Length: 456
Ligand code: BES
Ligand code: MN
Image (cartoon, rainbow, N blue to C red; front, side, top):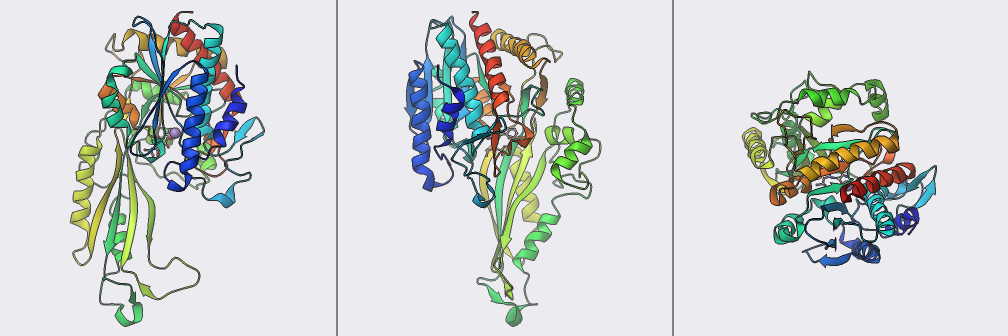
């Protein structure tokens, strides 16, 4: 059996940044690395071409009466920028303080390796393990998975699993496992405002036209109410009431509001009334400004009225909101509120539908899960309890993995999500790392779950 940490280092050395064409070789390297590793474990590996980065479909087939688990992961990572803030280079993995440092160690190479290692050990002990396993590993997760939906439709027949298993979500502390039951959705777009048709000298022309930066920031200022809600008519209409068990479960989190505030380094929270910060980030939708620009950004000063200004906006959505319904509400408000003396366009970016799965025994409707998924939930509860010394919490996440709702829609399958990354892992930021004790324990949980599922 291979050494999972050494393998993870090899994986991290491939700079697989999906959004930037300059990393094409790193993308191919990471893809070939994963394909090779799964082949060495006896999987039949197909590398499915897409318009951009291929999807790895690796199967261990067997009689149809064997349970069939689909393990999802992604081999692409976020850009490493800003490079100057890394203590060690992002694609030269470094082991220290019980962690592995490097871009993608936590999102998602480490968690993926956690499960590959579990499968490797299990197959070594039981070469004839009565379990069908499909690894489904994509390379476009960090860019909104544009190829994934067409892939699902095309490969539907072969993806006839009992459920999907993955780790692309978090835990609050090293000793507290989480089974993630919900993900927020997303809708992203950009607004570009144009004033005059060229940049202008603000002395020659200042005072006769509306500055596009002013138009844009005035618009942005209308998008929230003073108490922190999103100020778009109808925005909250489809937000589902939170079930009492969810609030109860969240109360067991054990993080204090003060600690969370300190972790963020903010003087106060800004939350719509009636929610704790832990609730707000899981149960409420948001509208965020991700970037804003226009005019002179360089050293010193420049007396200019810029021709253009832009803002990048994303909304996190919660069940039962949909991008299809929210997008028109947003666009209508923007069109209505934008002053008539500038021109503008709205540029669509990607979407993701929110997701919720109710673990067995938590809802009032009995038998709401297919038996093998219900069994997997039960065995993961027991396995996490054994390995971590206490049962997992069942929580929603604030983040998004949009393909999980797509899988539910197209394949009809729910997902069992084992949280593995920690708040201090610095996902998407400089100095990303993955806790190797969590990796080792998470891998033990996976092995127990898969072996119980196979009945060995
Ligand atoms: N692993 C994250 C999702 C995540 C982040 C879950 C934080 C829980 C907590 C995933 O790789 C990711 O970053 N997703 C993007 C969405 C994607 C469409 C770009 C996100 O949530 O912003
Ligand atoms: Mn991820």
